[in-house]
Length: 304
Image (tube, rainbow, N blue to C red):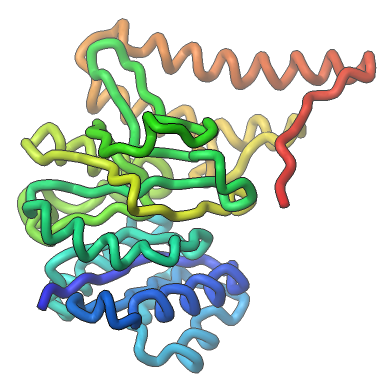
């Protein structure tokens, strides 16, 4: 029987964790998936909202690890993966987040997909927005080390036939990605030093691809991401704009982006998309600030 560990770090967000654990235990205990041995590993990185105590009391069957508040996402994943491989002897590791929910057939489909792929294939999920389940958030990502072009496939696009087939990609996100334990033994762990929060997932999976692993996204693995729980963004505030450029909690951390490009690109010209990204981000902020003087407001996506 194959052993699969579902690993996710948490820092507060108890309401998300309650919903997540309830769903995971429900979906992994149906008869159709009992051919797989699922375990859940939660890494609590210093929560102050009672998350550790609540999980300990309500889900004693979960493997609950404790961090010191400095693990961040990559360190939390590494701690969980090490435990899953060394203590639980897991064959596969499934990266998860507490703010995502799976489709009812997710784990039944996963059982079939694992059986039909070899350990050198890293499998990603089709991720939708939770507040609009017809909009795709990601089907993996592409990255060209020569041109520097890096983006998610299908990002915030309406679902269509092009995204209902298996897609081969260059990197995968940190949610709904399943990897055989041997991958960590062959290429090492996530780079928690250089990419503690963002880029840890894309760096790891892109490194795997350069080592000969195949990365795919299977559209039958559907999960739903609550983007309200995303990292730091400017949110039309000047102070937050500057914080977002340097904070570990931000996907717009300029130093982490530069470090990723320094590690993985092959030409100085490959930095152009990075320059374009930050120009658009910063100038876009000031553009809408000026337009707001004339009562022209940016249309924002409704979050339900």
